[in-house]
Length: 381
Image (cartoon, rainbow, N blue to C red; front, side, top):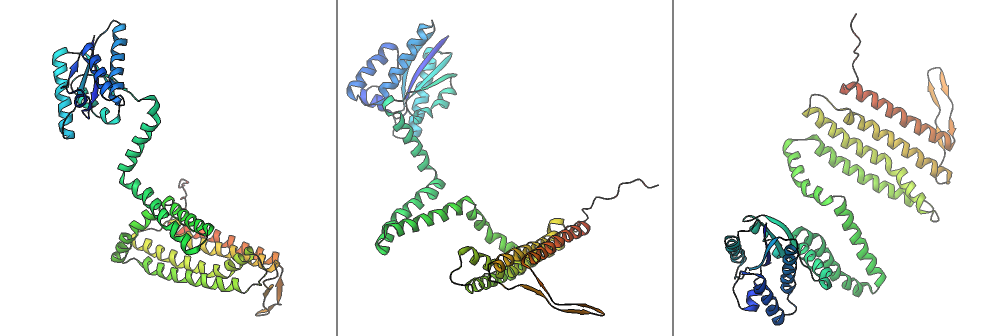
């Protein structure tokens, strides 16, 4: 079996340093070339590549296999010209030695790109990449950085925010005069950016204008109800902040949050009801039947609102920030219900019970109206 061991030099450094034309074939010729290039430029990695080619050739000959070592080079002013030069040199070697296979020896990822060109002319049995041991980590890091910088999306995602941080951080230190404050501001911005990218907010915002335009042109009712929901949610936040501000000054952050939830939940629930109602109407217009998920959503919103209202009221009442719940006197015909004051536990149980009942009613209503109830499959007698 005849094997051709080819050392590839795509950049054309070997003939440029030695002053000879490629291809160079034969043990003595390559051995002399190694000495000449090594003396001219001892730091050239091509020296190690040619030595590795000689090493592989010797190992193949030790196994009683016919092996010929050769060096091809792409000395040219352009990448296309260099690749064509290598292709022509490989054709010359194949015509001269008629090998059964080739072992390609390279010293860089750039040289390794010529393997398909060689493989199109003769079978390639192996590719031996030579990396100088002292520079292995440096070269690997170099190629990783090169690939990273070649990716436009990665550059915009990583390098641009990093550059902005390096520009803004000194400015914040000059304005605030505090290293801790500047570092805290930069950390907060980086955290927001990571959450923004991690949750895919950028992708959602990219599709939002087109989705909004399509919704407006199609005349969806949900567009109006979403605006109403946004207004109700804003009112809920405003009412919650006012309710939380009425608490005593010595209360903790937990009670402030609970008071905000107690005051704002009704408005938030109304906002969710408005949004779900619009989505339900759109579904009814576009489809012949309603899905159970859309029908069950309003009931679920009311149930969750009642439960959250009940728990927040219980906590505020036990903390002394909310009065007891009083059921007024009721006169229904001959039946009279006296005024009743509920304990915090009774109040919580009432809200939770109402929430569960509404949730169950919603499930039954959604199942019956959507037609998801399993039909009776008993045979007709």
